Length: 270
Image (tube, rainbow, N blue to C red; front, top):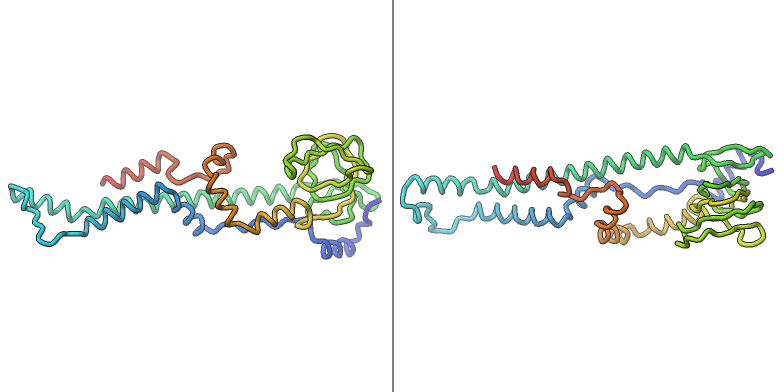
């Protein structure tokens, strides 16, 4: 018959066993995204070239004469004017690098904000069938507690860990956890454990929820992944080019757009 649905009992279960919510990873600040954009190799080369150009434009060797190698006075004046304006090229490159970095960081920030908003909306709208008070009702996934009897069927993404108590030709895809592509047959007598984050590929059944949120299998994995963000970022940077080509995560590397190159060339040639 499932839980009685008493609010006091439900609140106590949430307090003891936790809520069925996995806290998202802390989003990166705008300054962090700016710093990441500055790590692009091409931008670093442009920054070094701009600094060298600026340094040379302000460096005048002692005893240097603009007219020493010029036959006419007008040519000497022209060379002197070019020397005085030599800093413009380096400054233009630096300005273009700043603009590209700011635009890239803003794009990444806005995309991440939109993605988190969409993710929160999906989590709030996702519902699951649960037996409470001898009635089958639909609840938001975040309201499921330990002890609930959840009905599962083909196509469901299991929202919590549980033990199968009734099954009908139930097969589960556990590739997201184990990497095995073969579907695993589940029954109440042999291998009744069901893990969150796995998909129901065949059959139907009922399970008793045993772990939710950060205490579930998915929550434990997410917690472990979030414990080492620096190592994760290193892996992302190392395989960033491949991931961007195959997974289309929405992140764009600086200077990957033609307009950015055109912008730099335009500013560096005033």
